[in-house]
Image (tube, rainbow over all chains, first blue to last red):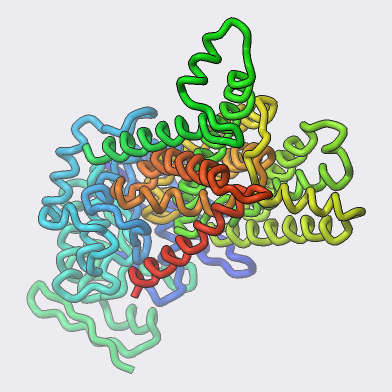
Length: 255
Length: 328
């Protein structure tokens, strides 16, 4: 079991607090959606969880070990992070992009990870990229690029997968695909944390919700407790109707 | 393997050009003459010309070209900008300024080593300023800091020209700025080579980080890459290598910009794979251009830097056009 434990984390951005006294526990096998209005601190929280941003106060521990004390490479071997609208700067092939996910496993000298090619094949296959493996990553469509990036993130079999807005800019088909892949990762025992704006998708796939507003963690609870009209309308400052039909929850916003 | 084919072709081309460069000059030598002269018990004129003029000039050309191509490839990978080159970060300009100061205050006439040493100090200074100014910032702040350093150094060089005590000093400065490998001796090679080699090693150590950086800084960091260390390696390597090269050969532009572009597509665009071919391409370009300046019989001899700029500038335009096509 992997436990990522955040205690009393604060991040200061000039005079403003981007995160204030956030405490939460993220466990393996759970898919947590981080939700909240723009500027609530979702991306900041994810960067802290990924160990890329050191908190000004508080601590993040992975299975008891403070992230700040883990060596970069050691952390990189167990955690994968995808920033918002990730892209590739050079026209390198999709297969090589995915292979970059193995960087933390590379020996000090040499270019090959034992069993690396099989891992790459598996990641390509699970993200439906076998046809695209030789395409230049700069020529991919948004949906294809998102798949390539996800394959890059999962190729090293991380225990902790942190994704910032995996569905931004994707059409419904690709957005659903992306969520399904994250969900199946979590079912394989990975701790998945993703910032999301599409509450309907999140309602369908996420196990837990972390609700952020103005840098504070308002709730961290299972979907049923968070997807309620009084919670969401207060969070987003708009009228919200939540409908439950059988196992499906849908959220409608109106001005 | 396609990658090794590129290496082989470039290596062969560089070796061939270097061989040609050994025999071309004010005094043309034939391989036969050289062999005869070198095997003779007492060194004669042909042997002296070969050993003390043509050989150091060729070696210096290879070293200078290689480090320019390599640092261009590293900087383009680091900044993820196809227009990056040592000049963009002000390193070659600052090296020029250092050497110009040596000429200007007459240090260069007391000892020939003053120019190169001052040049190196300038390059290291510029790299430190760029690093300091962008310590906690992004790639953009590194570029901006570099542009500022570069402008200051250029202004300093112009000031020296402006205030030159006599026309001869101004002439000497401006000739030096044009870049040349003419009349370079083993002393110059001995001075520049250690810096170029150490700089080259530091630059080659950046390879893995450059590959990861093609996914952007956030992802590279998440993959365990230490961005600060990479920047330090790249800038220190460029300062030592390009500083060493510029301080003995003068300002030679465009090689750092062009060499990586010549080879990039042929190695699958992977930043790390570009490094060694870019160094070979740089060595080939500078050697070829140096041969050309010796073959074009005009007096005074066309300066190497001027010649490369003349040919390089249109190529630069072509890069701009190609990038515009790619992005539209």
